[in-house]
Length: 39
Image (cartoon, rainbow, N blue to C red; front, side, top):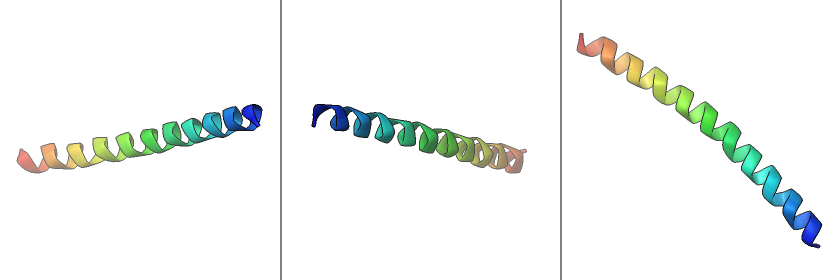
């Protein structure tokens, strides 16, 4: 049971990292659009 719990945690954290990267990329795009429209 402990082993499967560890695997679940690792998979969940990997998914969070992937989601984080996508999210930060979108933030960069949004910030880029904002700074462009401010000029």
